Amino acid sequence: MKPLAHSYYCGTSDEQIIYETIGVYFDRICAQFPTTDALVVRHQDIRWTYQELAQQVNDLAAGLLALGVEPGDRVGIWGPNSYEWVMVQLATAKIGAIMVCINPAYRTYELEFALNKVECSMLITAEHFKTSAYLDMLNHLAPELANSKPGELKSKALPHLRQVIRMGDEATPGMFNFATVCSMGGDKEKKRLKQLQAELKPDDAINIQFTSGTTGNPKGATLSHCNILNNGYLTGAAMGLSNEDRLCIPVPLYHCFGMVLSVLACVAHGATMVFPSAAFDPLETLKTVQQEKCTALHGVPTMFITELDHPDFSQFDLSSLRTGIMAGAPCPVEVMKRVLAEMHMEDILIAYGQTELSPINNMTLPNDSLERRTETVGRAMPWAEVKIVDEEGHVVPVGEKGEICTRGYSVMQGYWNDPERTAETIDKSGWLHSGDLATMDEAGYVRIVGRIKDMIIRGGENVYPREIEEFLYQHPAISEVQVFGIPDDKMGEEVCAWVQLNAGQTMSEEELKAFCKDKITHFKIPRFIKFVDEYPMTVTGKIQKFVMREEMLKDLASSSHSKG
Ligand code: AMP
Image 1 (spheres, rainbow, N blue to C red):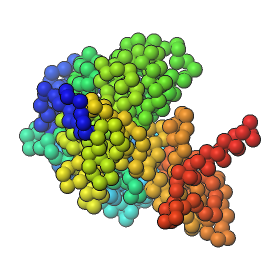
Image 2: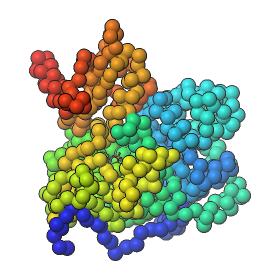
Image 3: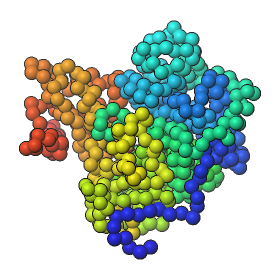
Image 4: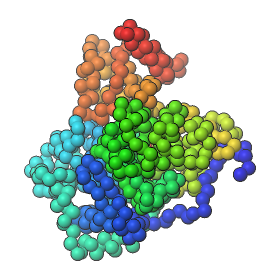
């Protein structure tokens, strides 16, 4: 390749885009690798081959059809990683229903918004996990459930929701049990399921993932079969996955990292999905890699750091590992070096992308130099065009900083029911604007150097300051609030809030945290809070978060100093 003069690079490939639905592709893989392990879920004692998984998925799909689910209906899924979650992903894809991923850490305020925003008619939910009592939260939002016949909910707060399916064996008023639904489909539904495979189209929307942004409330990024199947296939291909590989999946399923880069990457190549636990647990992950002889392991940088720092780390034999993906946040060079040396992941890939891109557009490859694998996020993947532009939208010369934009098969269809926000993100020529700052070198390798968008990445979870600010404004004592991130060695960043109270009001840090608890996700609750009378401003009246960040870091350093 000739050295680039301008920061534009398009990934190439000898292969064709897979222009099929997930259902058709999945059925073919199941027929091709019937006896290969498809799904291992250690915390639920599940071990299914592709043939068994196909049977389970078809039973659930037929049951959902019996309940009247139609192509295009929005079906929410809420809970930590489980075999039911994987079944729902594949069964909804086979029916053409749009699966809506709901963060298992969401609380009532966020759940209500998500279900109503995309008008979910069905919700499939876990019972409880750690501090999340899913059924209690649902009953709190929709007390009508207690007196409803299953499937006939009419709720004031959740006006579109009709059917709730709960996991687990206990019966709950107003809800179906997951296992019951799996046995509801008869011959008629099985026939319809077959017909549907020919009727559905690769460009149909099949998944909605919530992401936020500078505009406050979460938006539903809408992705098609073609978007996510190809992204899963390509990332699996880059890892060299085959039906002999076993991928350890500690990342959450509700995010593209779990459902695309893990589930679909495995399904696309007939590899085995191995889930160590319901939510990330470093010890279970290490045990799983050893006992299941996993060849690949995924994680955000914080997960790898926690595994490497575990006191028992050196006792595990991780020599079966070869590859995996680290993505979601900048990876510290030292961590990458330890992953290569101490976890034997010689072929690990660094990936960069965002939910709106299904999610990956750039990645390093195993034969890239160590320097490129530690300092860059690699080049554009096949069929993705990547460019770096200045504030006027002109492509910048190589080496210059600008916003990274992507165009191609992986760009989402848009934000559900939100043409304005969609138009702010995808321009008229089809380029998706990332809000991330980067440079590109002469060979097309990209370095992420910062962010234009106001976002915090805490332990791989995106936190949007505006969303927290809007939530806190609801408190009658709060006059103004500014949320921002400060660097943290382990979590990458931590959430800080500066709060100004209305005249005559008082509030403690504990009171503010208590106000957040049970309403917003735990990782959004500010870790550091400072009550202030004013904010640093520019002459034009723009609040300067970077000044607050510097001051907060000084405050924290001096308080830890005086304590120490
Ligand atoms: P999400 O939509 O949750 O996938 O988050 C996407 C955002 O995470 C991107 O816009 C980046 O700001 C950040 N991000 C993802 N991968 C990386 C990476 N490898 N290095 C730096 N930032 C990343």
